[in-house]
Length: 418
Image (tube, rainbow, N blue to C red; front, side, top):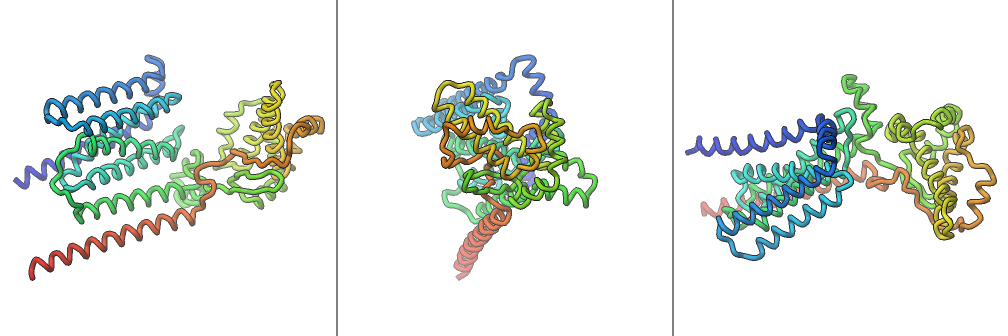
């Protein structure tokens, strides 16, 4: 009997492993698969495929619940419809990049195998949380692998999408299917398992957020065989939120002091680079000078691009409101350039002459507050120390919870022998 049970457990985790490996192995092939499918059936095929899979899953589960399990509780079907609708909503929301919706299928299937595997270890409702956490952990490793593969990159939004995919399927099982579990009360063993998984997720996410371009440069010096990672797009960047009375708010990967020093000592060099790239492709420039590797060159060009596009939009419109709005943005972006990238701007072909400045200033109120979106992001107001303090606090709380439940178990064991 024990050997049969061991065989079932091993088989369950084998399916989890195979599913995870299948997800990982598609990473280096993803672009080729995307190109092939797009050529044969069109890019929207991915979206339609996910919608079809969602509908098929809904119908199969509905059939099993009603005809096989004879479940008549309306709440099961309401949850089934609700979760299916959420899948449809996010698939449609991703329609501009429909291949991203494939995550729902990958991590839905993985969630099914995870639930089956954890069923041998967790007998209470924490099974759904455990399956979600391990699915999220695998999803983070998926994104790390994408960062390592040339031509791919790490995206925190995709980490969230993987987590969403894992979580939705567990809610579908919990509320829609409602499989029978051995225990109604939470067991200390399950608390320990989810604590370990949650800690692993927090630590891995913290390491990803700390894997800044500066840190990549440091460890690739010690480990030369990883030197190829220096050319990868930044996995994480902690940015600075700068306030200026004349401008408002703008963001940068550099401190104000660093911006000043670079602009002073490398203006001629960087001005020549901007001049040489004036007639070349903007997207190619950003690829050659990514923000994590060449922050000053990257940011000055993005500010110039935003300034010039807004100026063009203002000049091409007869609507006074549109003109004022875009002239203001162009003025503020130019002010950022002149105050913090000024010497480099002077040596580049992108400086404004006085006639343009006069035209831009005429209809606007320069006192209007402005916040530039250039280099802004989720972690723009965070720093590495705060991030790790939050993680450390969470780990301490998890430890305290486990010690509390361990004490309860110890007390219960003593009572058995009294």
